[in-house]
Length: 255
Image (cartoon, rainbow, N blue to C red; front, side):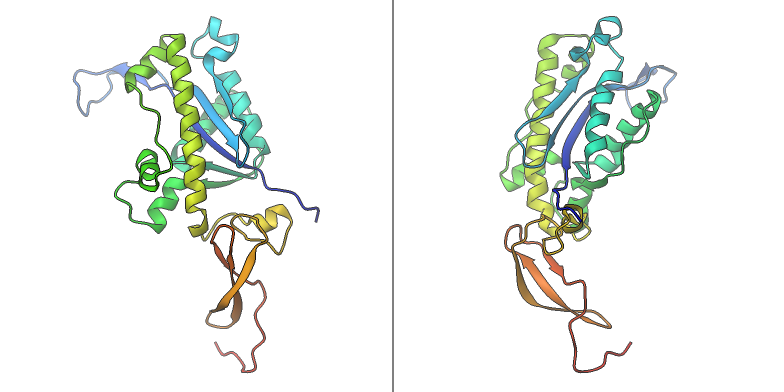
């Protein structure tokens, strides 16, 4: 197998809200649904690279005719996802990936090439008991940055109205999200026991399955009900793993 490096994409999307009429303010049934949501913009970067890929509605000529036509934004996002071996997003499994797929199929785009998904929200809930699992709170907890402060929903309204300054701020907000998300992913990565196998993806059988580095050190043995395996720790990221083949034993193993 030719050795390569897995392509891991960190990404985040921003969408417009649904629009409709209600008789009141709280927990209302919608009387009339007037506008379905659409994608405003996205930001993405390959793990370890400085360049950030972005796209927002007013980047394209379509915006002059239809301020809600997100086809070109989706095509650019599709191209990135189609190249990825692994994608990382916060709440990505329930939001970013499914929302993107919904717009891909709407615009007649086929499914992108298969990729593994790492949802840092799911990771935070599965392995830890933090006071809050929001991206901003987790990054503040670790001291690795914060989301960009903005005025709230008013920013979305201004973008939908076509205000250029608002679009620029929205894009900065989107980019900041993936910058801190990358740091959060690296912080949590050693704990992810079902992480896509980087050793396999990179074509390096003697590497850490979580980070792909070959800085492995023996750390005792791992015992299952029927076999004994060499235990390893990665001195680069701290993840632990086991050998693929059982260690030889002088005594027969029983089930």
